[in-house]
Image (cartoon, rainbow, N blue to C red):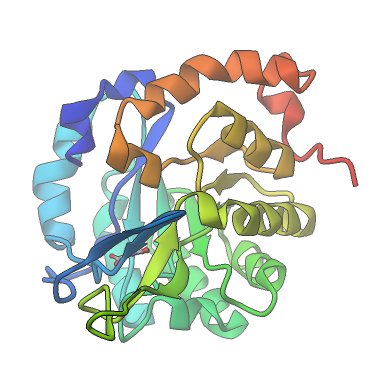
Length: 277
Ligand code: RRO
């Protein structure tokens, strides 16, 4: 949400908020961020102020911000996801969608563990769908044996789209202390290192489902964004690049028409999923 004080949101297509849980969470021990040579490791541990704070204090401030707003929910049980959806349902005037995060790598319960099982994903998405009419986008991890199967399970259960991919589970080591770089030991890797992994996941899920995909994973510039579109992303989200400079979002939007022309396209929609194999 701090992003709203750094950039003019009306200049981007949309924002996805940090995942929220039913109750506030303090998150993992510090340090929580470590920059590697090819990306960033994080172990935030789902720190957030809880859904009631989001509903009362954050979402009202985003009404009329000039871009699409997506909330993101995460929980330790199917019931928690359902209750989160119920609480957000009244905000359909503000929310363009709800991301169901079943892929956080940094929590002991839920997170990536839920997203690994087809049955769990299916039942969780159905449960959420019972409580909201806001469009659902399930956020998946690449760290599963077959992401396309998980995507199909989410879509058949009521997810209108997908958010791909979450960070990749990883470990950074300080050799002088023989210790992890992160207080939570493991973390999630984001940034340029994971872009090829993310592109493969987007392409596989696009082919398997055909639903709208929000692609992410190492998008640093407009060329990266167009690569995600060619793989099948209908929208592209940017995370790690904004840590360095939030105005990268403007650069990507402004450069997009030129890079699309380089790929022989006049509009973003005509290039989605056009990978030649
Ligand atoms: O808060 C986090 O540690 C976190 C989350 Br919820 C997520 O979905 N992905 C990630 O890399 N970190």
